[in-house]
Image (cartoon, rainbow, N blue to C red):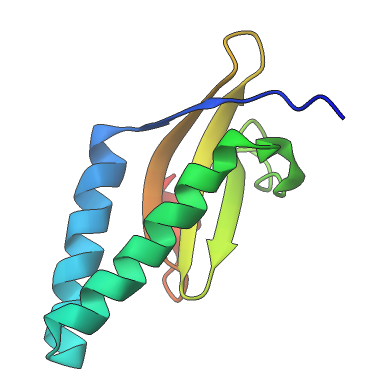
Length: 103
């Protein structure tokens, strides 16, 4: 089977979101090791978008051009560019928040 490999890029806002999530995890767990493990796991899931990113569901209208990766308490919003074979990760949210209004 021939798989296309996509180039995964983290946009500035998504990088900032990850840093904020990391800080929040340290605050609630009081353990930098746990926070690091959780964020590393999430980053690995994001890197995994290089293979078949379109397997993830589309966002509801009016954001149907975007997709979302759901992992534990996180939702990453991204766009797939089929022409350039790229995945642009736009934002990373805590799944418990009303993230739709920030997309």
